[in-house]
Image (cartoon, rainbow, N blue to C red; front, side, top):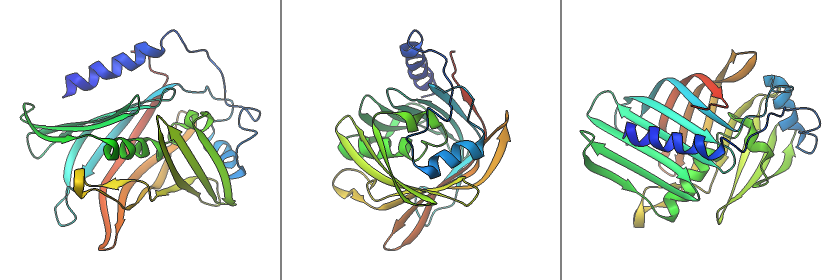
Length: 254
């Protein structure tokens, strides 16, 4: 699975290699965005920094809980994102069992695969619901890699001084979410009702949140540090994933 992840990552790097020019976030490039987004870009230090076209998200540690009543399992997580077109590829290796997985959204198709001993298939999530959910996984990370906010696939609407509603249309999918900010201007939570929980006939839309609990300064930019993913079902909240980001490397070319 790691080999597949690396091959797909290299394919995406090569796809953009000859179609990138250096440009910068400025007051002018974000002038048409809602005030909370503009405040975020200033608060995090992205103004006058290069606009990124892709990124490696380097996780220091990460954990997943496969069922609400299960224990946490520690993961090794590797992640790559690209902005235009929207791509997200993640590799996950369980440190407590011989299971690896790969989660991808690319060209409008999302897919989740898992293997035992890197050979026996045990997870094969695909279809419209999986693709929409994979797109929303990217959506909640738009402010981690803020070039996404400039994409023509997203529109923004101010709700109040600390909340922005966003609509994302991509490859036939049409989803919405709320981005929440604190008084300093830092992004704290994304929430949506458009993500599916489960697969196939058992899948259903359940309220979903991505929460940033803290920030760190890396290369003069404030980036998320501690992140949690939570499902909000009728039975109660189910914290599904949590992790600590070490750094985000922008504009990778190898």
